[in-house]
Length: 358
Image 1 (cartoon, helix red, strand yellow):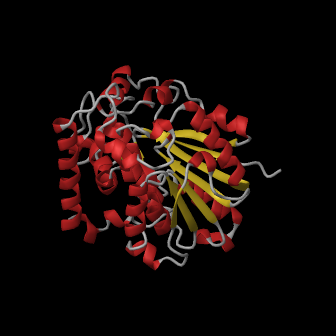
Image 2 (image 1 turned 90 degrees about the horizontal axis):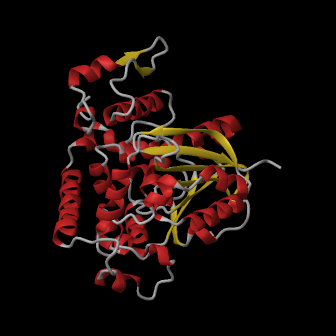
Image 3 (image 1 turned 180 degrees about the vertical axis):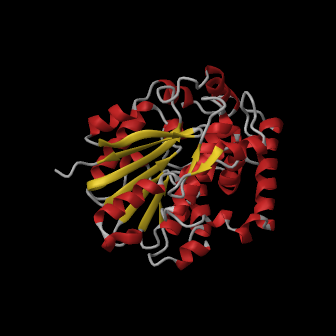
């Protein structure tokens, strides 16, 4: 309820009202018993909070490391939050960037000599150098957590349930990801692989990304995380690669995961990526995808918010993603089947696709 009261909505929920919204059912699950507004941000976050709680109760994943009591008030986490906020403030206010402007000198310098698609050469998030900036890599997760009021990491954890259910369906021999492989495309700082390793300690994982800065950060921090060090599987590997040309043989992975990259890409690049996902998945394998909620999922997504992302935060493909891209169609054309109905969570939508067995 404390988090809910911080979320912008037409009528913010108080702590007392938040407590009244929650009912514990006979089987021990938590549910919302009423909604103040079908479109309120507080209610969206409430659903996400309860889904997170129920996933822990049902054993989908343990209590996330960042929520454990010993980690909640650490000096490191406070410093990271302050550092990411200051970095963003300096970038937004001290060096405002518009998508109509030329590339910043930082972007020109950082991209020199790198084989990058043209669509990647933007100062994304209005931060000089975009994803190529080492400082961006360092603060990406904490900054996202601040912007989405505690919903960034929690929302990404929703991708773990389809993996858990697929492992359970395969039988006890596959518990914890034994004998299975996962590819995370557009892995960024590798944070999702930490979450996946906590949930599935025997799962073998590879993350690919175009940014040397993001990969350097991932290589330095992911293997050192306590959950990764305790895992039975080798530490996740990281490789610089374009998701439009995945460096892997056919039928190499049981799972391919992706979060929050497609809204940074033009439609043709998304379509090619989906074809590559189809190629590298094993028959019966899953493509688990999470990205910004689209207008087709929620018509209440406003034009003003899309313009705000386009102009103030340098998200040049956000409007195309929200209004035009049909991922179901792109996946169907590539040969992937819809494995579950789309599920909106707060500001994102979870989609799951399966490669046919035959």
